[in-house]
Length: 311
Image (tube, rainbow, N blue to C red; front, top):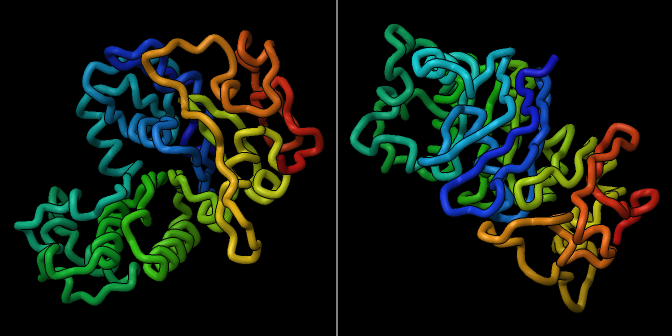
C-alpha cells in the first residue's frame, strides 16, 4: 500500500518559461525507502516540499499529491497542519536552521504536544542520544547530534511518511554512515515510508529499495535500486554513474557530462537532456519522450540503452 502517491505534478513559478516540475509521477510504499536523485536544480527538493504543501511564493500547481489517501494540494490549512503533525514529517538538510537556538532540545521536541515528555525521552534514546541532551541548547550539540534530534522530532507524531531532504550533506563521512544506519533502523522499527532526496548515487544505492532519477523537473528513469544502478537504461542515469568517483577504479580523468541543465527561462520542445546526450537525434530535440515500462522500471527516452548497459 502506498503512503505517498504523486500523480502528474506540474508546478510553475513566476518568471519561468516552462514548468519547474513537469508531470512528476512517483510513489512510496509502507516501510519502503525510495531515493530521488539528480543534479542540483533538477526539482528534487521542490517535489519533496510539495508533499508537505510547502509551495514557493507565487507557485501554481496542477496534478495530485496524496499522502495516506489525502490530497495535500486540496486540504484546508487546518487539515494540512494536522497532516504535518501526525502523518508526514520532514528532515531538512541543515539541522541548525530548523531548531530555535534559544530553546532547549526538550522544549523543541514537545512543542505543541502536551504530556509528551516520555515520548521525547524514548525517541532521544532510540536515535542514540543520552537523556541529558533534553536539557541542552542546540549550540551545545554537534551537527550529527542535532541531525539525530531532528529525526527524533520528526518521529514525535508517529508519521507514516518521512521526507529526508539531503539530511547527510553537511555531515562528515562517519556521521553520514551513522545517520543512514539510523534511518534504516527507523524504517524497520516503525514501518515508516522514506522519500530520500540526494545527489549522492552511492548513498542512494546503499539505502534505497527503488530510485527515481530526475532531470529538469521530469522523471527520466525509475526502477529497483539493484537493477537501475547496475543496468541503467537512460543516458542521463548512465552519465551520472560514469561521473561518480570510485575507490576501486583508477581513472586518469573523471568522466563529466558536457553542457549545462536547461535554463528555466527557455521553453523545452523535446527531451530536456537532448542537448547533452550522445544518443540524441532530431526526434529527441523535437518530441518529448513518453515513459516506457521495462520490467519493474520506467524510462523516458526515445533511444534507451539496449539491455541497460552503461554508456
